[in-house]
Length: 164
Ligand code: 5GP
Image (cartoon, rainbow, N blue to C red; front, side, top):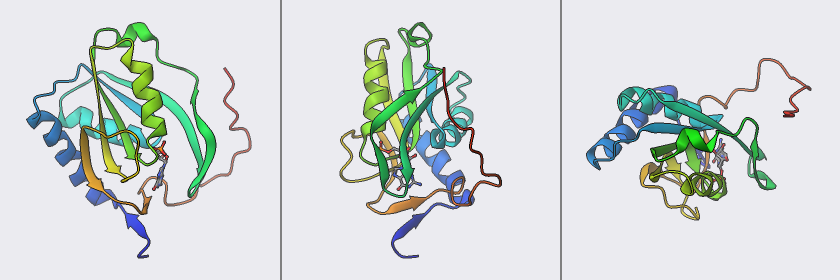
């Protein structure tokens, strides 16, 4: 429908290649890619292959509970990457979308103390995002349907409490 921005699997393939091209053409050579789960995993995998980077890390951040339904603030879920793993590295943070930007700000600030350089790559950025990403494929102010989260889960689980 007209109020949604729809990313198909096929278009996602194009987006990943084009985003990687932007990173490469800027001269940035990340030592590692830090994905923000879950949406950022797809983007990080795509960038990892296209940029020939094998060193991929994951951070779990929970913020949204539904369409435009948010917690008060994003929270890091365990396991949190060990700062020593990021030490002195050029990091490329990969996520699906910078909406409010709060999630990327949390991750960028977490990295900033430890790493040599941190830059963000996203498929979409919304105009009100507080974080301006270095690499953005498309800008939109609409709610985005991503191919990986458009369909409901095949099973409903009630045991999704992540305790350390
Ligand atoms: P932010 O912290 O920038 O507000 O939001 C970051 C996360 O919220 C995204 O990584 C994504 O998981 C979720 N999110 C924000 N906006 C959208 C959207 O338009 N569509 C979908 N499907 N998820 C969104």
